[in-house]
Length: 168
Image (cartoon, rainbow, N blue to C red; front, side, top):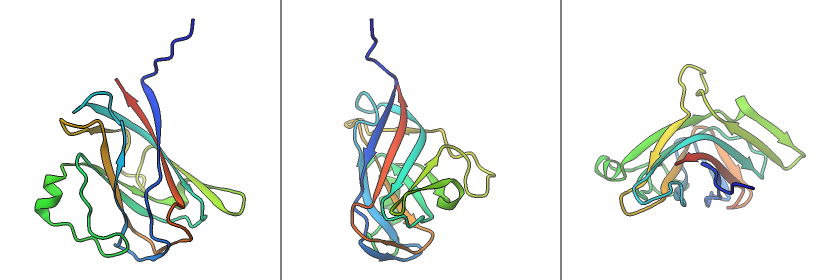
């Protein structure tokens, strides 16, 4: 008899990136929902890995910031400009710095994949697993990214994240 319950899930999210150039320290995309990241309202989960699919094969470095509430860190394509009070109100959960070239593989001529499940770009800080917690009235958490290298996506849907999540 099959057991259709698993405490693991993968959630695919395609944020709206800027088609064209986004500069260093600019917001890569506005705060985006990771729907049903937890089982019950206000619940927690463990983020154990992230697969990033770059359909434009650009291989960008960026920082990902996770929050309980939706809060833009500025306008996508412009310098990050979130106020201290807005950042605290968003209830930050954690951050990851992504060094695309450290773990990326090319897939054909138009795409690259980057799987992230552990250390930061200097291999001196373990960043995953990370606990994420939804607000008391939600089962979602949110994320945004800040560019650490100039990016130039061809289309607004050129970047997809696959979040590998353990939830109970």
